[in-house]
Image (tube, rainbow, N blue to C red; front, side, top):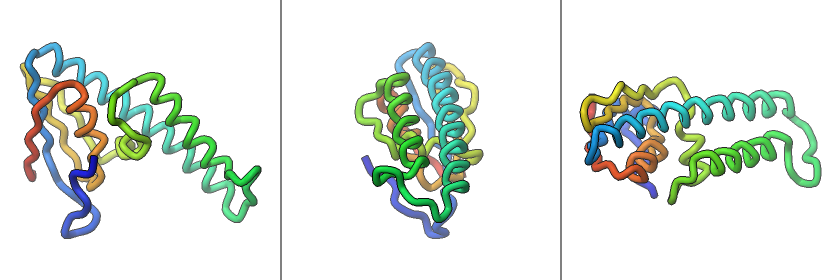
Length: 138
């Protein structure tokens, strides 16, 4: 799924994504899931980045650098944890970073603020959990 390719500034989207669910419990479950996934993806990205920093100029082992192996392993672990249809590796790593905030759900609504221009992962999780979605600039 590709929803957004670029912004005029090439680095910031400044968006609010609102997911509306059928039930309040669904919004709460999506909130908890997103927060957990964002934390998991951020931890994975930090570990992969640490390996990339160490392997500058390194030779691949069996054609694969340790950071690439770690990236794939972390993705496989996430697939086992979250089991979302249509959710791909890029969506998972798009969740990482400090520029996204998941607000506490209110009723059947969940609001997410992001300055990231790669937010397909957020949309994928909301859709997989049955939300209808509105996207607003803020």
